Amino acid sequence: MSTRRVRDNAGMPPWIPRLLAEIVAIVVGLFIAYHVVKALRGLIIIIVISLFLSVALEPGVNFLARRGWRRGLGTGAMFLGLVATASIFVGLMIPLIVGQVKLLVDRLPDYIDQISEFAARFGIDFTGKNLTETAGEVGGDLSDFSSNLAGRIFGVGQTLLNTVFQLLTIGLFTFYMTAEGPKMRRGVCSLLPRHKQLEVLRVWDIAIDKTGAYFYTRTLLAGISTVLGWAVFTMIGLDFPLALALWMAIISQFVPVIGTYLGGALPALIALLDSPGKAIAVVAFVIVYQQIENYLLAPRLTARTMSLHPAVSFGSAIAGGTLMGVPGALMALPTVATLQAFISTYIERYKVVDSPLTAEPPERLPRQEA
Image (cartoon, rainbow, N blue to C red; front, side, top):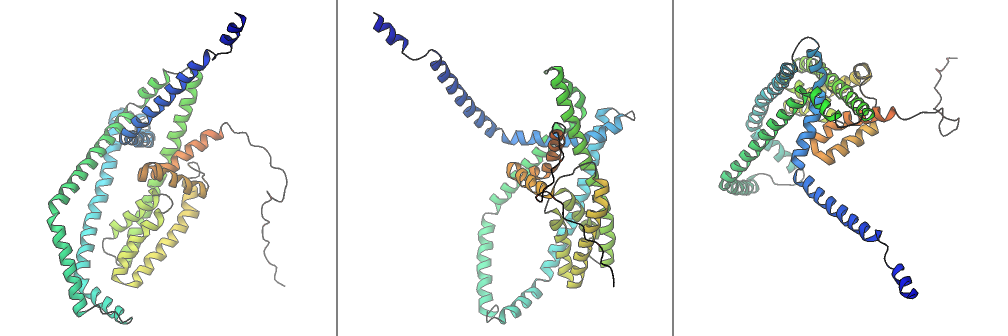
């Protein structure tokens, strides 16, 4: 009898089945959550973009609200400003693209002659029979392309409609989050105890300060760049100087890390199609202006917005682009700046001990003439 009781006591503890059931439930829950998030990834990205835009617009709406505007009316005014700016940008870029395509088509025979002369130096026959065969191959490719033209047009139209729908959805979410910002924050805080409410509001305030200041200082820098670029491109004699200046300003300010190179590449390329001298002048202007902006304008305008190390900026842009594509790269810098400002309130810094590993390099003294 006692031996049987010992065997019963040596059996499985009662908490093990419960633990196994909890582990299975957690695994199943994570599996379901993963597939739900994967299925709703597009909607989640739209909500994140809308939240970012609402935080960026919040300072402007608050500015109008303090002067007697209703939040809905102030949000509408900010939206009209964004739509007007985007419309002007698109309206200026369309004639630029059409004009450059027409110019390329008009100069195509000259380009072919130049390529033929250059290829002849290396013993490559780019004329006569070879050119005829190449033209025949191109004609065949064009025939295949035209046969699938209806399907391609349908695909482009479907993509365009999908893009318009996503933009309208982002606009709707952004308008609601901005116009109903205080109400939405009260709803979130009502679910939390007092000390948690203070933490949430602190994070929200830091996000508004960093993101809003980043957005408006970048807009101001883009305006300065547009005016100066317009004047210089006009003096150089480029076609569509305002469109090129606006392109350079917006791309260089709002595309992190590589925006400066992308923004200056298009004006330089268009200038090169006209003459190498104009292209050199454009590149020289871009380099000089970037030095003025980096060392004179940007430090004064962005001193209180972000103090990110260049390596951190580069890494955050890559991480944001990997997670969410182009929108993630654009939102990465203010997001990391917000996290850095929030974390810094909980980090206590200490005096660094003297060591050759932490010593600053000595300053060079001016050389004395003998």
